[in-house]
Length: 603
Picture 1: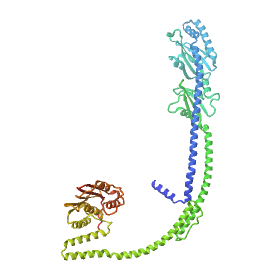
Picture 2: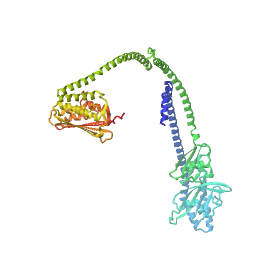
Picture 3: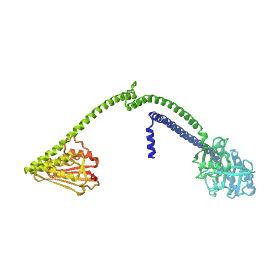
C-alpha cells in the first residue's frame, strides 16, 4: 500500500503544471458542487420520507378515529339494549315461562332486536345467547329468526364470539369471523356484552349479547369505496397480529409473525409484485387494534427521481461550463509559464544573457522580473567564482609554504631543550618537553577524536606545567578505568574545566587537590567523567546558571566552562549531559555524561 501511495505521489509530482492545475481546479470546483447537490438531494429525500411517514401516520390516525366513532355508535346500541328494561324483563321471564309463553316472548324479543338492527344498515345480526344454551337471533339479511348466520351451530355457546364475551363485564371487540352460506363466504366482526338484570344482579348474567357487523364496513373505513386500487393499501390486525380486515378476504384470520412483520407477510403473499414496499403502522390506544399502511415507494418517490434527473442534468452542464472556464484560465497562466521554462532551458545550455520581456504586473510578471535579476546575479557569480578560483590556487601555494612554521617551532623548542640539559637546567627542560607535547597534541587536528589513554598522558603533561608554574602548590590525580582507555572522545574537551579549577579554585591555597575520574557509565554506551577539586567553590547563582541545559549564555566568550558546554551540545546534542555541584569553601564537582566512541579499527 505504501509503495503504491509513493508511486502515485511521484506520478502526480511529475505531471505538468497544466495538468495539475486542471486536476486541482476540477477537484476544487466540481467536487464541492457535486457533493453539495448530492447533499441537498439526500436532504430532500429524507425530508420527503419524513413527510410521507407523517402524512401516512396521520391518515392512519384519522382512520382509527373514524373507526372509533363507528365503534361508539355500535357501542351505543349495545348499551341501549343493556339498559332496555323491557327487553331484559322479557328475557328474564323467558327462562321461567312455559313453551306457549316462551313463544310469545320470543316474538316480542325478536321484534325488539329487529328495531335495533334496522338502526344501522351494516348490522348483520343481533343475538342473545342464554347460559342454558337457548338463543334468540335476528338476522337482518334473511329477516328471519330461524335462518341466520348461526344456522350451522346447534349450541351458540361453542362459538368463538360467545367464549370471548363470557365472563367479561365490559364491551368486547371480537375479530372478524368467517361464515359460509350457499357457497358464499361472509366476513363478520362482533361486539359482545353480557346483559344483567339491574333489579336482581345476584342472579348473574341473563344472557350474552352479540352484535354482528359486516367486515366490509372496516374495509370501507380503511380504503374507501375503491378498495385495493391505487399505490397503497390499508389493513387491520388485532393486538396479537391476527388479520381483521384485508383487501383480499382470503387472508383474513391469518396471523403476522413477529419475525416477518407486516412487510414480510406482504412479500410472502406476493400480492403487490413490482412494488418497492414501504410500511407505516399505528396502534389504536383504545381498542389495541393496529392499522397498517403498505405503499409503493417507487410511485411515492417518482417526484424525487425527477428531481434527481434535473440535478444530474444541471451537474453535467455545470461541469462543461467549469471545464471551459478552467481551460481558458489554464491557457492564460501556462502561456507565460512556458516562456519562463524556455528561458531556464537556455540558461542551462549556457546562455547567461537570456532575459524575459515583462509586460504584466501580476505574480508571473514578478517571477519574470526576479528571473531577470537572478540571471544577472548568476552571470556575476560565475565571474566571481572564476576570480575566487584563481585566488584559491594562490592561497593553497601559500598554505604549503606556511606548513614549515610549526616544524620550525618544534625544532626550535627541541634545540632549547638540549641547551637546558647541557646546562643541567632539568626543570626548564621538563617544562619545554611538556610544552612541546602539548603543542603537538593541540595543533594536530584539534577538533578530532583521540583515545582516552592518549588524552590521559596529555593531561598529565598539561597539568605538570601548571604545577611547575605555581610551585607544586596543588596535587593532581587522574584515574581511568581500563575498559575506557581504548574508547575515544573529542580532544581538548575537558581541558578548560581543569584550567578553570586551577585558576579559580586551588592555585592560591595550600593542600589543593585536582582529581579526574573517567569510567564506563551505568547507562549503556556512555562515558562518565568526574572532575573534582577542593578549592574555594562557586556561588549558588553561578552553579544554577551553568546547569541550565538550554541557556543562551549572554554571548559569553572565552574558553572556560561555557566553551565546554557549547561544544558538548554541538558534538553530542541531547545524548550528553552535565551537572555542577559546588559548596562555597569546600570545593566543586563537575560531572559529564557523554556517548562513548569505539576505538579505531586496526589497519
